Length: 117
Image 1 (cartoon, rainbow, N blue to C red):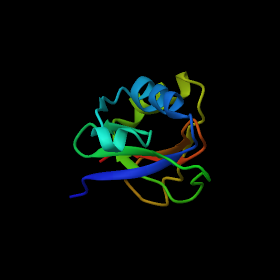
Image 2 (cartoon, helix red, strand yellow):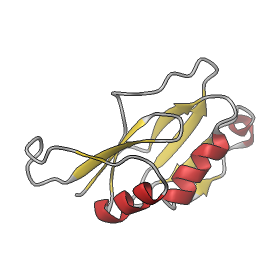
Image 3 (cartoon, rainbow, N blue to C red):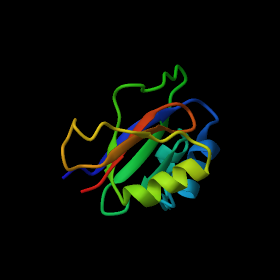
Image 4 (cartoon, rainbow, N blue to C red):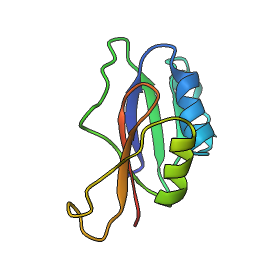
């Protein structure tokens, strides 16, 4: 089992990440230990288990290929993502038969995948 996945954001982007992961997706923000909180970033509980950690990088570069993938109710999450104005890119169903999935970009341009179990 994976405990957490970390993605990056630029300095000062935590509120945008909170708005997406906490607001649009409805994931609960987790408190960071004080020594780590001083570095910035934010952590979220992923429904169904695990955590997403967002770390601040001074020389931030968007993750355009590498990405985390989360098992969700894809129709509900796609509707929430689209309702927030973010793009929903459905994957070709022939790529992984029997598994509906889509990609989007978080507020700082990192690729994120959502799929059905």
